[in-house]
Length: 220
Image (cartoon, rainbow, N blue to C red; front, side):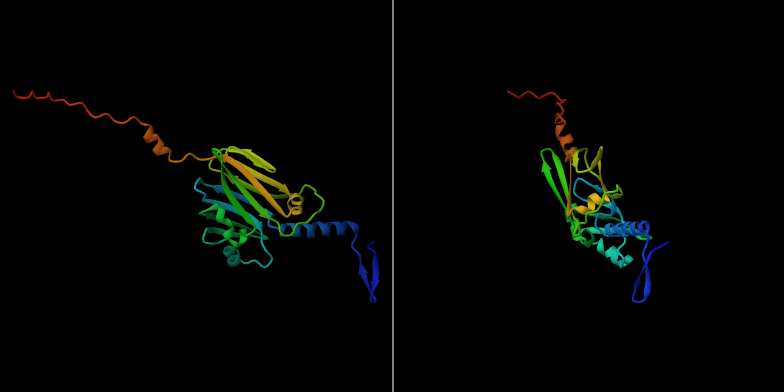
């Protein structure tokens, strides 16, 4: 039997403990999915810094198709397609410079930098979580971010899984929600520049053909 207590002449039913726990879990999931980390991101970076991405994320409560497309658009970021799937949406797009990704409103909390690291290149992605929250980690999957690089991945951190030129960062909801920001780094083999030019320069210079006619003797 569900307990109840009087309130202004009206009986208020108290939810059973199990129902309260379920309600709290639902509210927690709703809160975390409102964070900038409740996403699945798959991005490709080219050697010149341009690239493309596909991202599935939780739709804002007041979001509309036009407003969402606008959030992912700037002078450096272009939306190729956008589709809503119930309470989530998938956006596909491309950018001309990954370090300018934050010029789109949807990526305002994301900072990307590129730097030479010896013969390699290092990309650092910093993502700000404006509303950190601490709660019990039950192992519920959180954001999953996959990057395809223009060279073999040397190392990456944190929570990174590397396979060839691809690295995947995966977090639980609790891991992602508790911190005010996350910094992801990946170092990969820089793409060789002007390979064709180097190949041409390495070829031996063509020899001039030897003269075929006999030289004339000078008259005395």
